[in-house]
Length: 360
Length: 221
Image (tube, rainbow over all chains, first blue to last red; front, side, top):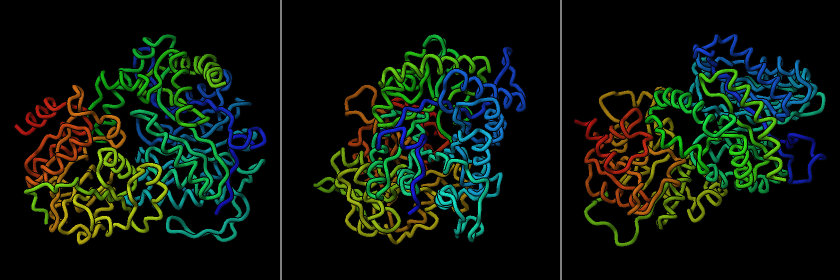
């Protein structure tokens, strides 16, 4: 049984079983558009993401995460490099992946990159590992989707071993064996926080508990409340495995603007377009205005509206899910960099203080 | 074999095979609808005891063979790529509900399902030659199954298709779908069940009966 990883902050900062409230932002680095609605280049999109991370730090956001993707619309395939650039220009904000598609990566390399980020940022690195719902990386790196489950299981276990520190001895089917292998650089203050992102697989919840990860629930459609049993499953699994309590987080998409109406009007056409593309890939029917209204309402998974609307929904769902962390996945293909900067500013200066107030 | 001519006097017993994304949700909805439910994954039921207890309280975790033996209806809720190694003998003589989908952009290419002349459930039926296959539940998101369930007279009740070659089996499964909280639209062959597949007119679409029937008739016409 691997020893547990530390929590997002040292345990001393929190009562046992009670974790500090963390309010972060995640991006998939969608290609942004200019004022004339023309797509910006990949290079400019990436530079903009760095600016967004720096602003997030300035306005008091706790965490900034970048989700790895490998497509024309999502050019941020090397999230850790962008995070390192943000680290060099910030002092406070925590930085991490959201998610690292671990199944098509090497746990040793992932550790090395994020441990390097931890060094550059003076201990502000985290990882959220996932099986990945976007599977572009599998054919790209020559992995078979049929091994999706096995790849993630083995690699999550190995990553937990490496993170514990000390020489690693390991054997499996998905990479060459390791014997008393030192993996460097050593993190300065012990293992950095590591989470597993879960979209709907109960086995992934159990896996997170077994290997000592915290749990990040990726809720991208339907009612957030339906994930409450997953929180319960995580707590009970930890208990059964004799593991200490660990925090639960929620990651959901949304968009904050000055008013509900403005947020809706900016977000809807971009959302429709993005989902249309996803629909083609995944074979499902295109969403309607009606289904969108449901998703941004109290029962849905989207956080679109004024700071007050979004803050209330975050507070309600964190309570319902017994979660202490919320990451807003901001940005939606084709929104402008300016709209994203406004979103970040409102999230940091208005939403976060209001959520803290509501949950105090 | 399922004779399909008379529904059993007691509610049919369901065995759900699979404890991933969809299995526990189907088990929970079935328990709520009043069915006796067993659930099995590959191997020891002990390994899914906690998942079952928390996500589908009331369902009984079992070894797959034991779950199937007692079941009137076996719900196949495993990822399609795992079906290639599924043993047909396990469900011989049983009514099998196929909830799986074949969609290469997200599942990768599976040789067994690459024959464009057949729908995935037709291929499943051919492989499970001694079972009676009915296709349903493949075209609603597992995360929607619980929250979109409505009583019979609700104006916003969603429709789901139920397709199969055996009218008795289709009738039995349609009754289950109705008790799950959906309007069952029957299709009279697994071949017609191709209308329920990814890329089709009703896949992932929340439609009421009239809209559902229109969507599949437009497509079929």
